[in-house]
Image (cartoon, rainbow, N blue to C red; front, side):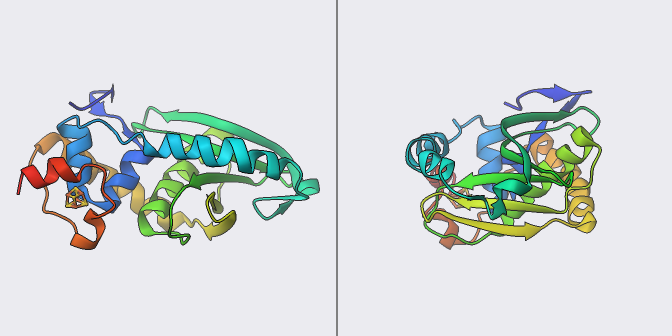
Length: 202
Ligand code: SF4
């Protein structure tokens, strides 16, 4: 099971990229074997953000650390697809400042409120897609940790984007070769939604 293709190559989503950097073996189960994607993220996001925090944020003078007066527009759930790269993603919130700066925001529901490597890679994928969509240069991104009601900003550099674009080929190779990758560090497995499938292969 490889999902959709663009020009004969599998389309990679920003979320796939996050899974790949969390554990290559996890992406293999999701993308090659077609194990159902975890529904937890949507459920949690709906419960935590749309109901409680959504109302709270509407009353705040700042949004994700930006003064309301700085913001020109906030786009909710922006789907982006780049045919040339075979890359897609849906950005939770896209903040456009009056200065013209474009900033992707990803909402996470997790007990650990720090930006981990796989989050940063997902944000970098959004930055690449937004660069093309708005003919801009995204230089920073935000993770909104809904549970902790905390926004964390992170820089996105051209090197981050270049490194990720080079890695897209390796992600496609993983999907095309169908060779099961080695397990990740065991500390990650406790949080893994495909663990039961993975254990059956050990
Ligand atoms: S259970 Fe561990 S090794 Fe297996 S896919 Fe999940 S994170 Fe990777």
